[in-house]
Length: 165
Image 1 (cartoon, rainbow, N blue to C red):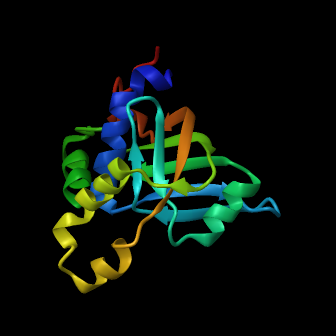
Image 2 (tube, rainbow, N blue to C red):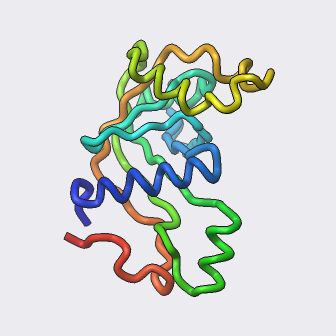
C-alpha cells in the first residue's frame, strides 16, 4: 500500500480518530529498548506525508526521540455511534484507525501557523479553567516524516477501504 496515494484517507482517519478520542498515541523506544506509549492530543498532519506535534508535557517522549527518532503514531476512532453503527450493519462506514510509522525530528519553536492550528483546535474549550491550564502555553513542536502506514484492520467489515497500489 502506498503512503502517498492513501494520504488523504490517512489524514481523514487520523482527524476522525482524534475527534473521537481527543488524542493519538505515539510509540517510541526507551534507551533501554523497552517500548513507551504516550497519548498526545496535538498531532497535526500536513499534505506532504509529514506532520508535527506540540512537545510540551511528555518529557520521556522527547528524551526517547532524541536517542531514537523512530515513532509510530496510532489513531483509532473510539466513537460509540461509529462502532454501534458498524456492528449493526456489519461494515465500517469509514476506516476505524491507522498506524503511521516515521522519524521525529528535534524540538523547534512553533511557527505562527502551527500556533494558530492548536488555538483553533482548543478554541471551544478556552473558557474552561482546565483548558487554559493545559493548552495555553504551547511553544515547541517536533516534525515527523512518515515513511509507512498500516490500517487498523478488521478485514470482514472493511474490504476495499484502502487502496493497494
